[in-house]
Image (cartoon, rainbow, N blue to C red; front, side, top):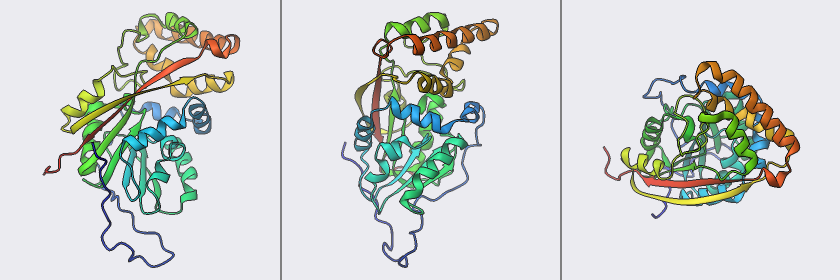
Length: 317
């Protein structure tokens, strides 16, 4: 699929010298009601710096850069990043650099503390070029057809997937690109499998994703996101697989990261209520023991991803 070319703003260059250009991505009241259900986890991100450092430690920036290229981001593009969080894709992944001085990035996320860090990191680009707005993926406060590219990394498992993709499609212009970096089932070492045994039937070891609306899951079944792209009316859907090694070298930082992501809490909700508290306590004891006692090479996992992209039909009404 050829990457979509950016639209040239009307009257480009007419802004007085020294003043930032008017934003090309226009805001609008969301067509869907603002969704709080399913996004309660957003208020739990009280340690955005810890989350940012922890995710960066287990994220290969080259993988994010390959996804930016896969999404067709070019100089001059107007880009919306959904589920932007602290801005790993926009900043460490090079999205802000890829759009160049004539482009624009608008990051959205339902977690206010993460967006505050996103804005601090974006300040170096000057006013208007990199912005952030609070919004769940299912209710983007952006007018129709505003973006050349609408993309997001490792966020879709938090969402009502059909509604989130429908909003991304709506916000992209006809012929524009929608792209997602989706999380697949990781390859786990024995140390992590012991943690799985503690959680028992709550652990999605058979390819089950944690249901949307209960917090973060661990994975998407292979091909599921691409199928959802097709169902929401995106065309010329393409995928690419990617993987990276995660070493979790710092025990304290690793425990801080897993706690902030609330992964174990989400999994525990699949258990009967009477088992949730005891199993969750046992899981955290096992996690602390693993990070403190197991050598880094023995807790190394392989994180697997799927890049998915599709185009908005040219002739949509």
